[in-house]
Length: 90
Image (cartoon, rainbow, N blue to C red; front, side, top):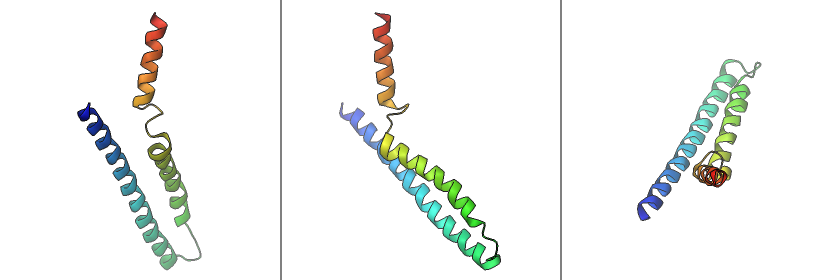
């Protein structure tokens, strides 16, 4: 039981770490792109396209990590489906 809880906690920490790494990269790269865009072509702003579309990915990743927490196609979902299928067979 403790090993299972440890593994779940370890997996959760990895998910959080991956999200924060993604978020930090997003912020750093977008700051860099804003600076490059403003220096090279301040009359033609293009950086926001990257910010918007990558930002959508960040929001989806955040919802997976903080809101869904594995409920959608995760361990809880698997266990629920297994239980449903076992009940159908009886």
